Image 1 (cartoon, chains in turn green, cyan):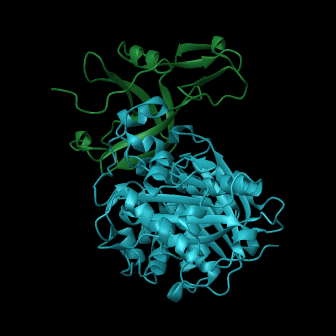
Image 2 (tube, each protein chain N blue to C red):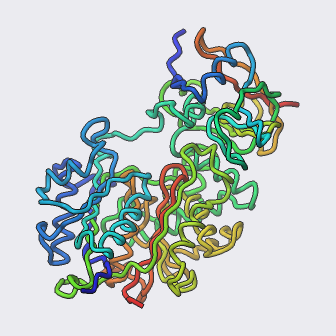
Length: 134
Length: 392
């Protein structure tokens, strides 16, 4: 079936995230100097330069920082799976990333532990999503 | 020459049928109508205008990327000395006023016109899912986060978790705002709303319901600012710009430092109050951008009308409704009066009218000082203005 949802406009700050997801790996950026992880935009304590940044594989474990259960979808492509959950996940390594929580559970709460899964949509796109880690 | 900048004219576009612009209009003719109306109120002519600020969401991609050029051509303004077209979301127009203040005060220009127009309801150009998955928002757009509501929903969820606010807290704001709208002839939604009706309205993106979300309407507005010297010969009493501040922090909600705290509003309001001798206790009217009920709750706390986490007590028992202890969003807000996409300019229009004492049924008792606050993007940008009918 054709994938009709929005496709990421991949750039230099996200390329390795999406590329590594195709191999079922979760990689985000890391600053050697400040010893902090981040994805895309830096919210680091120290000033860093590009030479300081490398991509590193992370555990894929974290907890829900915040979330919303969506009842009015972001366009017709998401209609079929509505309601669905979008969350900001705080990884064990400290960075926050936004993705879906795939679960049949009700009563999702902030602070719940989650674990990455890889949802292959096509040869070009695999989306890192999360499930509740029991 | 007394160059102290002051507001001398305002206007908003008349609406009918739940927020549709009356008559046949384009986004440009709406702005022309508002411009001429605000100039007429002040007793000025278009040829007096030598500075222009405009922002909106029309004409993009296309000429709308350079809106000041379009408006100067369309209105035939010759030749502006000061031009402003920054767009930081719905908070933008307060930022335009901040910058206009500085330009007028320092002698760059004398009379600035700030303009806004939208036909998003008539054109059905608003939806939750048409944004490109680009830059830092690529992850949330791919995940189907409806924007902007889903981002505000995540902030609300976080605020409830950290501070114990509830859906009832948010409903208090929806209901009190509707009560103000019922006193405004130009408000799109004037029928009474109860707490129970608010709580049982359609769920949109948890924990937010329909009644927590701003309207989708057409609309437009204009604000005219000139020097105190020039204001002496005009028809309105000058409204003084006593303080202003602006701040921003992120583009995607995921990069908001603490999702439960609107820290940028703390910064912009501190800047605004700084060295004015005015404190939050002196504010007679707060016009706080209510894109969503949660926006109001977080802004009240960040500005310091109450401390962080105390907003739920502050808005309880219809404290901010007509007859309550605190006058908030007396035009009926973006929740019930109008929300053409970028609402910020209406906080200024209503404040000026309240300070002039021309608000009819919804007029509050002899206000001296009003606070306007704009929020743009997804809690991304904050702008604060302190307005007063007293100079000192």
